[in-house]
Amino acid sequence: MNLPPGWQQFDPPAGLVLLAYAPRTGTFTSNLTATAEPNGDLGFRDWQVGVDMAFTQVLPGYTPIDLEQLTIEGRRGGRRLAIYDGPEGVPLAMEQWFVDIDGIGHTLTATVHISEYAQWADALVATATAWKPSEAP
Image (cartoon, rainbow, N blue to C red; front, side, top):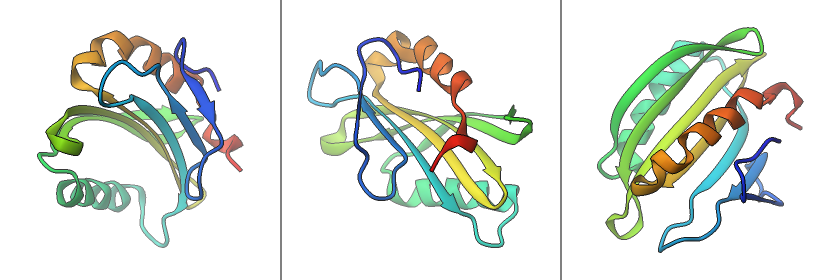
């Protein structure tokens, strides 16, 4: 995977396909994760509505900023940008790319301290552009 400069990839724990961290600069370490989970019988729209509802319930202060449709590997996908309150109220920005491939919901999620978002935004987009969810195990 084409990670942002200086980021390091680690063996992901169960439930993740990818885990990478930015160089540590403060109390929160920016990270990048990828998942591949079955969507059950949910269609694309219902899957994403459910994801947004879950974020509202589990991420304090979750505030969607942007949501757009994209084509990822020739399939209907999307990107969301949101902010929320992380551990100890640390303000975080979350940018997530998502696509359904044959009933498997693939997500690539970048979570960064809000003050570092501008620093990493272009590199994260480059990473997402190179992302190949169909190659996930």
